[in-house]
Amino acid sequence: MAYGFLKPLASLNGLPCSGHGLCLPSTVHSIQACGTPPVPYSIVIKNFTCWWPPFPLIPLEAVNPLRATLLVNFIPVMLEADMFVTHVSPCTNIVIYLCPCGKSICAIPTPIICSILTAEDMGGVGHVRTLFATTFTVFGLKRRVARVLDPLGAGFPGFSIPCSSVVAWGHPTVLAS
Image 1: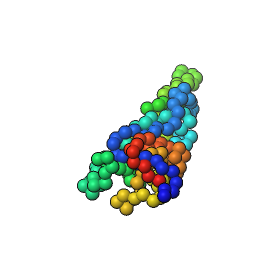
Image 2: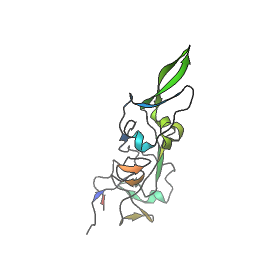
Image 3: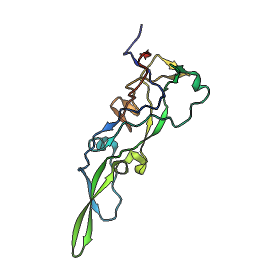
Image 4: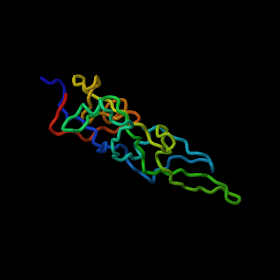
């Protein structure tokens, strides 16, 4: 008898995550002095004005020979603590720079990519995505196996840090609880 919810098993097939956030490019991020770097905000705040689109779940490390023995439908599965390539935002927000022009000060609105405006995105590189499996009874190679809707950050699906995305694709015929 299965305990919990049955969900499809997640596979390492390079399909994208769910993505998170909302792109509002006309949002003013901050008003600053001319020439100063933008002040980064937390990703929790920037989720309301920045969008991280669905991005392929490509593992940071290659599938080793031992890992290649754990297959479902001839495809390797995702396991607890798998790390994937960083998640970058293509969306922009506006930083208004107050610069001297003649005898007064001019406001210069400058669109800047959200990954630069977010503290967790490491200066535009993107934030890390680490898989947190939600199953308690199904293991592979002594690690919990991942399922669809498992978060890619610490926390709960949709409310995880730093990445609020979840695994969006899996095996439709192989379920785990």
